[in-house]
Length: 348
Image (cartoon, rainbow, N blue to C red; front, side, top):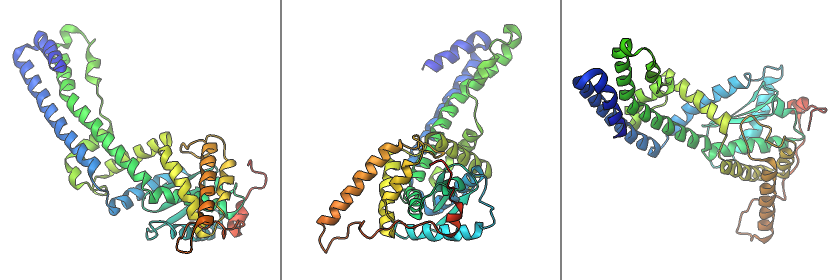
């Protein structure tokens, strides 16, 4: 109602009743389109993401992670390193709730301390992280943490929220489009008499490439297909999602859940989970990774408490129970290409 009155207030003095009627009709149509788009937003939030979409989105996100990480490592032993990394990673993934994903593990050229993952089974660690490892168990902890993000579908939940947010933003832009267009037409027709003081009103609601792309795809939400959404849309969504992750990271509860799942995967695969806690201690206080993480001290406290609970469960278990067994785990030393990357003088 307030916007309706504003339109009348602008239109009547400048353009007369006839023009004002057209503008108000356009405003009503825009409100209807916005309402329809909001219904699409609800459908978007409630839909189930298929594995095909997860894999396609994971392909796009992982390509972006590789690009931001300077590409995959090109050192002379890169092929052997990737073989070694994939043996370790797939052994851990085999213990997870999604062992049959087409898991891929890679090393980024970046010298920063970083580990990232993409939906569908992609996990990457940086050269800088490998240089700071004391043993293979620490690497296993990092990989297991990223595996847990994938099996928990944490990135897919963020992706869903991101799409819904963009849909709702697009609905707001759509609802404001008639007012913006009407204002621009009024200013244009009255510009010579009133000067250019009101010209900036027509720029009140600029539409970004992403919002425009999503608005075009809005009517296809029920049968949404990431692959068929067009290059512009895919690039915009992927870029926007990565920017969001670099700025916000995962929810804290997802990070803590990934930590707890990681030490259980480590133990099941035979690695000493305490080494992951030790690796966290070597990171800077804010996490040391490119995406935001909870404070390392809180992560360590939660992990140590969880490991103690697992040990108590082992002592109290019967022959018919199968708790995570920490007694048979080992601190596996670095070998071959991983050993070659260890930097003795690196800041630890």
